[in-house]
Image (cartoon, rainbow, N blue to C red; front, side):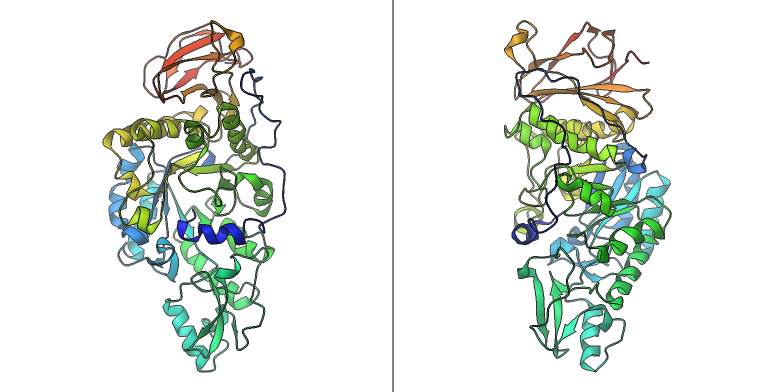
Length: 518
């Protein structure tokens, strides 16, 4: 989750430097051009099970910015779970500077912001969530501290007094010569505008500043030790995962980004790095990450108001391009990993946070529900990136959106672990040679144990449409009455290879179907 305050700076300085070019994570053969029926796609299956492959529904809290109280969230757990939420995300658990990074710049690593509550409140919330079968993950910074931090202020005074070995002083890099090369990981964690030596009048020396404060020097034991201490402090509370700020593939960072989180406490960890996306999935997976952003180039140059759904409804892509994009989650599944994407959002302080105004679709009450049905329905881990946005949705939207997540979590064929393959859709049954409609789409999902199968159909037009699918080669029985998983009851009967359903504008169907194998 990259706050907008850094996107422009990152774009120039990091985007090209991150890693060597790789073939696409969704490097299957290109989808056939619209107008030709695609052959039934090969459905990939996960090589290893994961707890996070068997749930969906994230809710993120910008608790440092909006002063969300842990006690209030704990009281709301039953309601959240009833609305399909299975993972709580916090930006961030420690005390952060609200003026920097929307509250994620660390002021005190060893306590929450007082407005959110005490450590006891946090521990109770994590335990209560676990007791209800929910997960707790966080966004965290482990590469620098905010320059207002008391820890750093103490280091400045100690350095001025001649101390070079204290816990505080040894965490950071100091010099009297501003021409000294700055400590760095490779690739670097910031553009040149955001890293360099800064004079400390108090210390009487320069310190290495990274982003909004002193950077931890991973080339020296003192910096690594303090980061280890901080991470153990929070993993001891039982958190189930983390998105690390920025990120790199330097082996010197791997211990704190990957190895310690995985091994220090026994619960399985959801490990993401902000810059990791599907375009370079194999590199991040080899590094040890087990989830990454669904889109390619998701941190830069794209923004938070764009995802695979928004691009097809606004005409940027068509059904073939959508299929190519969705293959990224198939690739992750085959690696035993997941991809993630959030409902369109924004976190610019002036544009979004202060006025509480966030991106919407033209018909948000309908389209955002279809967004959930497509992204979560395809097996992407999905949810709301901003609780402050969610609580301002209409009751109708909250209900419909939550029902999608409930449906996904209640059916094994819809979980991230379930295989996925495209089903030919959008042909005119009266004129089959006329080509495929580029704004309709269908797919088959099958549970990891092969016992349950779902057929999902989508109409991305702003008007009602008949959506016809060709069941040939899908293994779906052509004489049956499917179960409507989202609306309840039965769906339209299937009576032959060609199956047609009437869908309203931005409508969808999620149907449980039987196959020739069960």
